[in-house]
Amino acid sequence: MMNAPISRRHMLVACAVLAAVPSAFAQEATEQPSRRFMMEDAATGNVVDDDIMLGKVSLLYFGYTHCPDICPTSLVQMADVMKAMGDDAKKVQPIFVTVDPARDTSAVMREYVKSFDARIVALRGPAPYTDAMVKAHKAQYEIQKPGGDDPLLYTVDHTASIAMVGANGALLKRFPYGIATAEMTAAVQAAVKAIPAAP
Image (cartoon, rainbow, N blue to C red; front, top):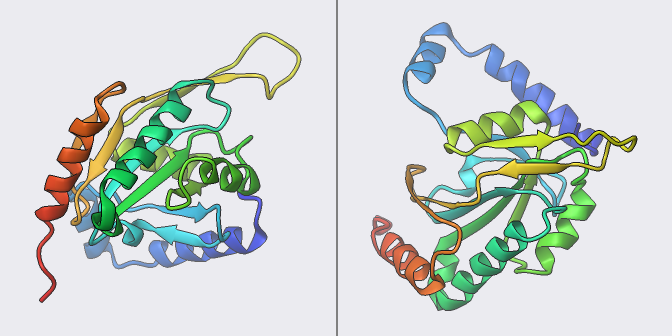
């Protein structure tokens, strides 16, 4: 559940609008794989969509703030790549999407990404929105429920790689966990150079 009423209202309106789309358009949309999404920007509480990625090379990571090691390591590396990019970092959009919205409130995520790099956009949304975004970007996650009494004491298995999405929204590649930062930076720089010049 979103913890901002305005965001919930915007999402419900958006769903109503999508439901009213002509059937011909809807058929075309189902025939062409789509990576469209709507999520809440934890920094502002506003609903954003995939337009925040268009025109830039995006580094996309699915994880959660209670992750003990893999997520922090991956976000540190994402921040290191941003620093290494210099001025070209303006053409890169780093994004962290929680797969644990039950515990990762907007306030929690906002403070979490600040500790790595203020340029990282933190996104969250209800489970159906999260699941759709995860699937569209060929990632996976599974909540591991323990047998204890506290329902909030659990871990989440999730894809550890960082996805690189091109300026046109196409999934270019995945950087495996543990890849050298220099190698990752070089690949991102190459993708940035391939962005078509503005007319």
